Amino acid sequence: MVWNQRIVISNRKPQLKICGVDEDGTPVTYLQSIKLEGNRRVLRTEPFVFSFRDALNAGTDFKLEFEFMGHYGEPNLEIIYGYHDEGNAQSLYLLEYNPRSGEWTTSKQSAITASGNANDIIDLTDETTILASEASDVAI
Image: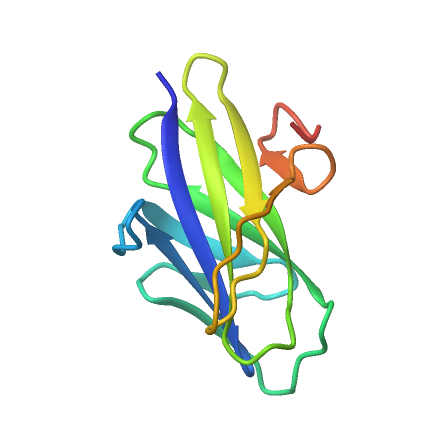
């Protein structure tokens, strides 16, 4: 059995909005909290929105740590999100958790703009997906 989930990260100047979604885009609640590296604030209620005082530069990387409800004993997951300078850009992250191995597999769909969809899948499991666990600091 593999647990499949999806996360959409959208950026609107100057904020990031993170939302769990179903296959058809319907919002789904399975995240308990989200942390942003370098920010003391931990988001614990939906909608998960990080607001910034200053304008953000395209290409800025944000390290986000997702804490799930834990029904399947899943560890936290860290994802690196690259900020897009397009008005309402969105990125869809496809998440798979294997409860037997305790490992996450993630992939990111190319940026989606308000005017269109993306079809390209980018594998993030080599360098940018990190299993946030005290037992392992190795990317899976």
